[in-house]
Each structure stands twice: as C-alpha cells, then as structure tokens.
Length: 197
Image (spheres, helix red, strand yellow):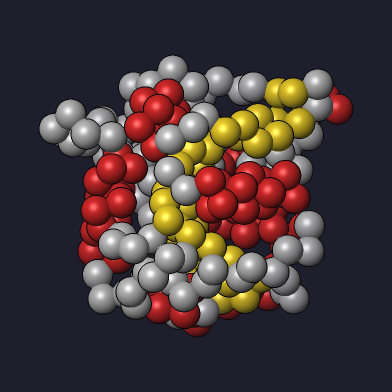
C-alpha cells in the first residue's frame, strides 16, 4: 500500500520521520511544491520522498496533515478519491489559538467526509502531540492511538499501519462513535497519554 502525506507542518513532518525510521515507504507534499521540502527529503531518504500535492493524493492511503482552516482549499482540484483510504488527522480548531471551529453540531469527520466523495475515511492520529510522535514505546510500553471509521477493511489497514509504526492501535468503532470520543478540542481522549504495558 502506498502512503501519501498531505501537509508538511509539525505533524506531517514527524509522521514522515516515524515512517522513515521504520523503513516504511511514503511520499509527502505541501502547498509550496517538492522543492521547498528538499532538506526534509534528503533527511528522510530513501524511504520518504517529496512530491507534488496531486501525486501524494493518489496514494492508496492518504493522510491529511493540513490544518483545519486550510483543508477545504487544499483539497480542491485533487483527483477523484475512488475508494482510496483517507486518514482524517485534522482537528477542527483555529491555529495557534486552538479555539474550536463552529461545526453546527456535526463531527469534524462528517464534514471531512463530505469533502472527499467516494473516499473511505478513517479518523486517526489526532490524539497525541506532534513532538511525541516519534516516541511510540515510552518506558517499555506502547503508546495508544485511537482510530474510527465506517469501513472495516479501511480501518484494519490503518490499524496495521499504526502497529508497524510502533503504536498500540485501538478501534473506537464508527466515525460517529469514535469522533465523539477522540475529536479535539472538546472530547475526552485527546491529550491523555495512554500507554499499553
């Protein structure tokens, strides 16, 4: 399965570093083009390459690492999603204030799913801070990551990827159930450092 990361901020970069350290091939892109990621690509070679936004969006598993306020614009003009897996790692908050964005009673993954017709959306990678992303096994345990979605096979593949990255993956069920537990800000799980021993 090919992996594409859309967004090269703190989260996207640390995600790419985790994948590279474990020899998992991936591509990463930002809005400024691959040339702006030359230093990062050199650091993470040969496992992670910098490509165009369009190319990264064509991967089998696409991870959205774009801030919420930029997400709608970032997704415009990308190829049809078909039945590809899209990991929604976007939190509905304003940066840097972390003020919640008004969603009119909807969960963020419901809004994201509407932006991605045909995609199999899995909500994941949203419950830990970027700076500890490359510490999946603190004190001999395995850091817990939650995921949720409405497609069982898509969830299985995302859960397998998390395990390859060194985490302990926990399925929270459907987007409606998982989103109500793990969405940041406002829900109970984000920011709690769960570790499985």
